[in-house]
Length: 298
Image (cartoon, rainbow, N blue to C red):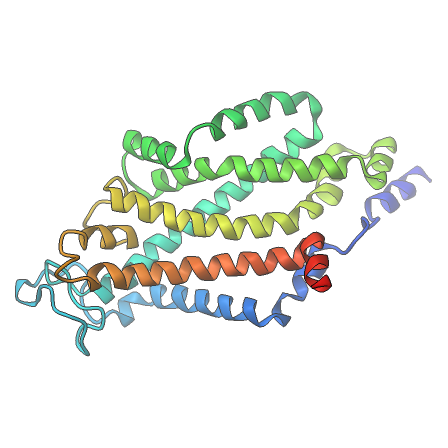
């Protein structure tokens, strides 16, 4: 008899719609569809860069240096005669990979730490003091310090950006856990002696999914910008690796003479970040009941 009661408690759906049901209606909004199509297009052309790039991104041609955009070089050439469009296409592989990996690592680690800190009160004080200390360090300076100590690579840059973004996820998930932990269905599950891991996975984590999806989109955009900033400051990937930050940094010295070397990659970077931010805003408006009510009232 007790086992059947426990199963019924575990299968009880909390008040409100499941996040999966909320996410099912996202494709009805044209703004989300447009942003997703733009991002898919950028990912597709970056992955297919070996097939789409008209020139070798590392080929130096002194006779073709600083050529303006034309039908041969759609984005022009840089100070070494390299085709900017080819470098932007190949740079998307690096920048988008860093953004996806950084957002994924931050989301996974932050969710685990936030769930544990929010559910177990004895660990909350210890873990959150560490997170508060991490938040006291400026994220950009922390990333620069980590990359400078370890050396520039995909692993070090992803780790640096993920650690800098980690406190935001932890505090977000912990706040949701603290509010859901006192709910009736959670207290009933605790009273019946259901294991804590099942309570966290079946009851608490689904309530964290909606805000976590929104935060992950913003972290993806922030990670792309952080990688560009690191490359622009010269502490990111080596100069021979084309990334959007390195391409923009290479164009600084010739910007007044050849502004396309900075404007073209900056436009692609801005389009990517803008699409991700708009997507995150639309997700927040749909998944957050407060924003949904305010939007419907207006």
